[in-house]
Amino acid sequence: MNIGQAAQASGVTAKMIRYYESIGLMPPSPRSEAGYRRYGEQDLHLLRFIRQSRRLGFGIDQIRQLLALWQDRGRSSAQVKALAQSHVDELNQRIGELVAMRDTLSHLAMHCHGDDRPDCPILEGIAAAALPGDLGTKAECSASPMTSCNPAPQAAASEAAAVESAAPTDKPVGDGDAQASQIPRR
Image (spheres, rainbow, N blue to C red):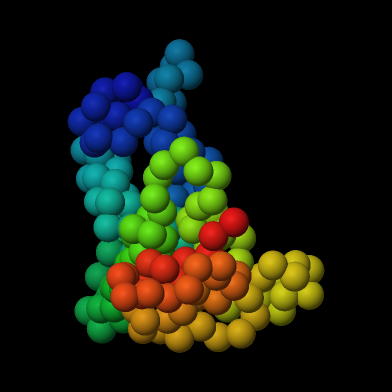
């Protein structure tokens, strides 16, 4: 079958098939006399394996390792499990980071009036660079005065503290929503 047919049968675009061949993730396909790529069932099986690995979030180097393990009948399942568990740990870390981003942005958006006034706690919070989890690298710390280089607390309460410490408030805390009244105003 040609590359278009292989793409349709495997669910991998022709462009990605050519890319996987160019980086050695799959062997170069044999060519017809006219110079067209030719693919067989084994190639489709390989392409489906790669596609499913990508859908699970594995990177190219990890897929390379998975392919080597898949093709090595002498390997132990412990090697495969170690690679999978390492990826699960990476995914859990990314999920934690995404949850923290969502929570911080939700908190900032909740305190924005969304009206015609120019003051905006969202922009103030971003400009303060004191969002939870924003530790910055040493290079970033020396390059930018806006980067927070101190470890931020991990709890949700730290999100409110980060926004509250972004700038002094010009509105005293009253009997209403104390947290909302702490949001910096300009």
